[in-house]
Amino acid sequence: EGHPDKLADQVSDSIVDACFAQDPDSHVACETCTGTGFVMIFGEITTNAKFDYEAVVRETIKGIGFDAPEKGLDYKTCEVLNRIHSQSVEIGAAVKKSKTIKPEEIGAGDQGHMFGYATDETPELMPLTHSLATGLGYQLTVVRKNGTLPLLRPDGKTQVTIEYEKKGGVMKPLRVHTIVISTQHDPKYTQTQLKQDLMEHVIKPLIPPHLLDDKTIYHINPSGMFTIGGPEGDGGLTGRKIIIDTYGGWGAHGGGAFSGKDPTKVDRSAAYYCRWIAKSIVAAGLAKRCIVQVSYAIGVPEPLSVFVDTYGTGSKPDPEILDIVKANFDMRAGMLVRELDMLKPKYKKTAAYGHFGNCARPADPDFTWEIPKKLVY
Image (cartoon, rainbow, N blue to C red):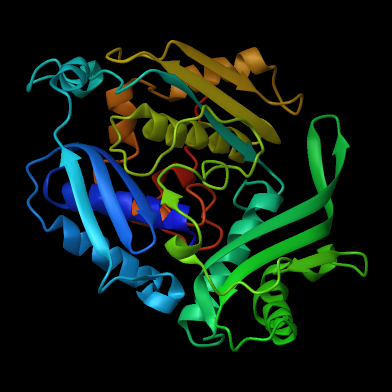
């Protein structure tokens, strides 16, 4: 949560949620940047919602745990800058051509292509490398906030390397090759004690024992002391962690970030929808792995292209699976938003530990794209 880029993502999505809490017709493109002693929100918002932007920003910073200058930021004293202005009337007119427009006529908020991915190597149908990396990050936050390891500080990163066996297109995890954890900490923490505590309270509870062996490599704070963190250590910006937000490098990415955007922006909503399609295909037993791609033009409701690839793992040929997708999913920009119930204040919680899979957190019905659709074919 406390990595500066993820702080920025959470602030941006807190603004999205504040808008949607009062006005489901909000149009939001909220960016955040942060550095030593300040957080700035900027971008374009058109909404009927009335709220204290600065209070929302400060509450988000507080929730992450930045409550003292020595931690890299203090929600009580940091400068909060608001440079929000209204959405371009030209963009707004392209998306909604009139106030009475039907959902099926709403155009995409931008051009671009989006991807969704699923694999049967984990119960949540996500790559194991990604599930373990986000799980370790979540566990770092749990032990920091519940008092188990009170000398930890908010900033940190994780990475997991796994050795796989590949047969055809099927990926089978064999063992964890390397675990990397870099976490901010109080200067009182010795590196020896920190490593012992992270092994006992973060790694062992998260990593399945059968995947660890005497050759597994552990890099715990490989740079040594990490006391200067948060925005004091590195500047942060919305949308700079798009790979950990998605599949950890598996599948593909169209380049568009998620946080700070309302669902008329297909960068976000169509990527969620593609994940839903891919997960539904794998959950139905139609494939062991699957990637789904769509593309849009601004102002045009229907996708320009739809592509499915099962990496040779499909129980049916890919063209037949594509026909099943087209028969079961309405990919028009305005319709997919409603099918996944996206016009709600539910985005801040997506802004850390990944938007997909949700393995690190308790099951949450707001992650509608993680509930496979029963396919008819």
